Length: 108
Image (tube, rainbow, N blue to C red; front, side):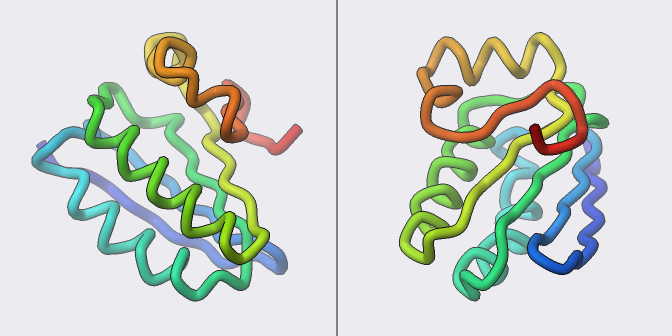
């Protein structure tokens, strides 16, 4: 399955809208977008997963790596628009306690 990725630059953050399935085959595409942004370390990152129908542990791993990189620059990672199913992945793994995960598409 193809992954759709759109990046929009805002004043204090990058918004990365993702659509499709995040799995071992498609995560490298999102990684190609997130790694340069997180290495720059000048803005927070808002990842909108509203149009993601499936995510496996490789997606979670990419977000953990992104969070660690942003923490080095005192920046934040926001995972927005998560479905109930994806939200449970963050709950089960304890990642919801480490990063901002929101079922809505706006930062709370």
